[in-house]
Length: 540
Image (tube, rainbow, N blue to C red; front, side):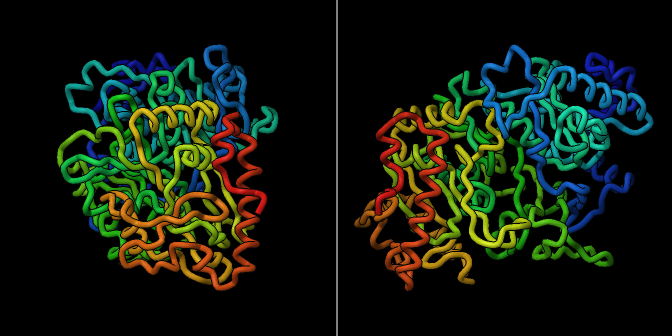
């Protein structure tokens, strides 16, 4: 839909007299522009393929929030949310608007849509971009409006993406690089420069929702969610990157609500997004058929390696990045609520699952947590990086991210932890931890990760309740309950003490991990002795 900037009120943003503005183009129009602009090619089953430039992931050290009076008493300031002055914001904002105003010969793409499937809590979002593939990305990732909803649309938050603009004065401004992602909460505007990576727009709005929703009693969560076929027994899956959050919640037996961002209100849970953003490194069509089959016309692949002649993709090639990705609308997953023509909402979860990839091999494949243990591990948000996944990582490295989403929190982590505690108690929710990493040895041993089919069996037992028929023992280091037997899974795999051959090495690894947990928890201690005492034992 071709509009002038004045028609859409862009002049109020300083984008003056733009005439080459295109609002909410169809996927076909966007893909045609991707190809004609030489931004990318058409690949597997009609999916577009693009490279995202020098940045193939987010730039957390370049994310800032303007220090202004309406929000500065609420923001969790620090490494995640860095302060920046109004003057610096204004200077960079002028560069961004000048970039748009002087490049009106090239199309300006506008996407208007929603973040939040529950209309009661939805945020009207407007994304402005100069690259067709970025417009395609947000078309996939946010909730697409009906035509009649655009007539009176007023944005509640706007992102102006000027990825070609660089901050050449970053050293003078005391910033970290030429890249900037800056949020002004009072003006309800964010600007992006120096990075093309689409995830900055997706996670930028997520950060805004983390700021807005808790004041409405809604817990904003970095999690995936699914339900039974009859829409009963909702489950939510928390987990950091690499733990299997997207893969495991995409279950042919349970319709998907969403794979990454949700809210939990007193009415139930709801997806923030209209699409999925799945990793495709080492994608296997047999083990992950739903994600593989979602790669078709309308999907957008990022940074995959392909043959220049045949355009055949090598999903196992991480030479560009280990963070190869695909975005697609939720209805590309046939077994999703959206695919069935319903809004992505559900009642209150019956099960909460904390996913972790433990490279130390200390945590059991599954454990049942008390309410206090659940709070402790939610605040901890543990997983581990392994050798080869990042430059400089040569041995298992514990990673803690509060609320399983530290980089996106705008308020102090305890605000979200308290909301989770309140809702767990109010709606009587069971909590389990599932380790998708190493069991019986650490990552350095050369052994493979815990079997994905076995993990799926564990999840089935949790979700259908049959795990409750098991007899449980207690993990000697972490204190949570471990099933002594579960279906046809070898019982020795369920208990780390029995799974390890080298017990001396097991105890060494366990004590090392316990120390890391306890040291990390001090930063976020609720002051609640019951929760503190629910952590791992440090006197073994």
